Length: 69
Image (cartoon, rainbow, N blue to C red; front, side, top):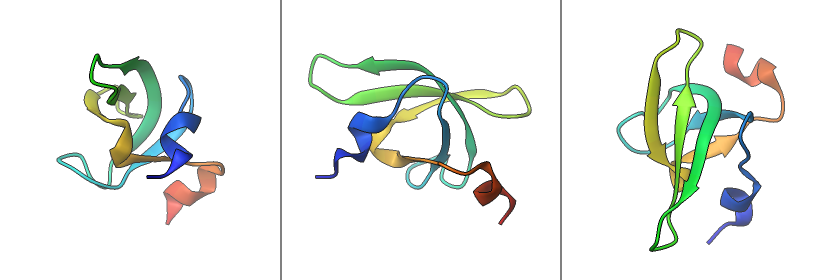
């Protein structure tokens, strides 16, 4: 299992790489750890739309230019 999940913080730019919202990106908000240990986050897109996803389904983008691919 990757430690990438532990690096997610509120305010990070992220890209969803799995699950229902695959391919979407935005800013991490409302980072939570459930009783079972799963990380859940709310992602705010540039359009103002919010969605929830699991931390295992996202990667943190270090360079915002990656979004322009």
